[in-house]
Length: 352
Image (tube, rainbow, N blue to C red):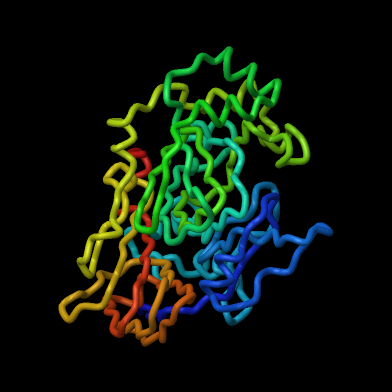
């Protein structure tokens, strides 16, 4: 017997972080900013983990999304993976959704860091997933919002070792390509690519479902270098770093500009991201029908209704909604803009 689960509106889920931000998330949701922590007068709630079955690195439950009935979404998915993920995804590693979505508001520049590949994560973290990610810029503020990605010129391992040992932040940041961004821009960050998000950039971030961040620039951000290399030691961690040069043509393969695209359904990310996750911008249209899929929705503006085979869900600016595969086909009506975040198409483990 097939269980049909309807869409579920999710509450905010902002585990504490080491960097400042969060006002843009509060403004989107129409709520007061997150209360300050750590005896600071600035909030440290810069990330909202949406539809998360992933915990923060080394923690038991921090990061997990809860459902209205009190269960963790992770436990609900494990209990009925076919209803949540569809039969083709139900055999995915540990019944994982294959997706982590965040709202990320950089109230300060983030440190220079990178993430491991699937193969590196298998060897060193006993994980099926590494951490490729992508940014969908939904708002910017301040004088010069920008992101930093990829070394502009190839670097030697010896140079990187020196920068990390000396914590030479200007050299690390200065070696990266720096790109001004505006709403509608998207950037795919493959595993290994060094990167940092600049102050004043608010993104919907899609990631593989892990919390593996290898942080070259740990000083003034993290408590110790151990937090930067996640216990591996930098000699090992830096083996996952992409040392190659990224010129303008190569950068063009990971960047997409979608802000002026008027279509009701827009694929937001470059094709190279599709083995890891997919994202669409949705605006209502009479003939637009969305295929069944596990999905995480973020409503950027307006109001309307999500209609599925298993029920309806009102939508309004700032809402975050998880949609099980068994909800079936869906449509959206009203006057609103929705980011629809999706896992990759099903594929065999030996294709990774």
